[in-house]
Length: 289
Image (cartoon, rainbow, N blue to C red; front, side, top):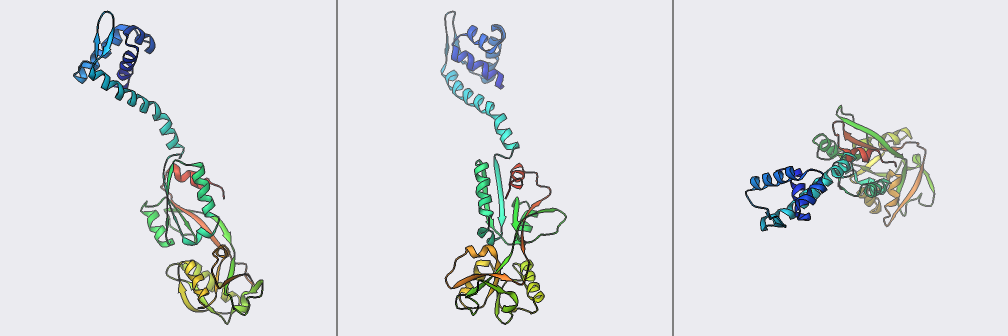
């Protein structure tokens, strides 16, 4: 049994005439009759009752007609299904991201992707850079959004965007009345730093920023994620240097002030396995920020 036979059967069942069905499928009547007889033999059931005046469906023929129509409709849709998959318009996309990305333009990027590819099942997970690296290697996620470039021979990365830093100060800090604060002016403060184990790159970057400004930061607490760092500032544990996007996290008793005395920036990257040939991944990588 093949789709051609099913299409012949549907033509006869709908026309209830071998001659009209033959004309409809563009073959002569004898080979059409032979194909229907072959189909009945293969299925072991009489599908049509034939007489000199009419053709009628048996109960088995009626059951086959419903299934044949369904199968032919599915077959007709296969080229479109395959085409959409090849264009990355269907399938799935698994994204890992560091938590602080929710305060940047990344959510808008994800929303734009969902609008362009509404039939792609998108899943997102908040993960550390280290965990994303492992999951990318094991093909557990398709793309990662990270704050540091990871150098691995199997990993491809691309810069997404950069942002500067701000000072996060307790509301009663001595410099709270200034719109901008010099990094050097914070030399005597207690610092809440990003965890060295969870965010080693930005931890080291901030430490070097302070040293370049002429002092070694007095770190009294390390924390992760960034929202916890800001929460500790609100609790009066110390001050923090945070990426500019964190000012979108409005928390009682915390003020954000522009930072002078450094041109340092933190950078976001997209990361993916070089062997990942997923078309949904290609579509995501082609998005414009």
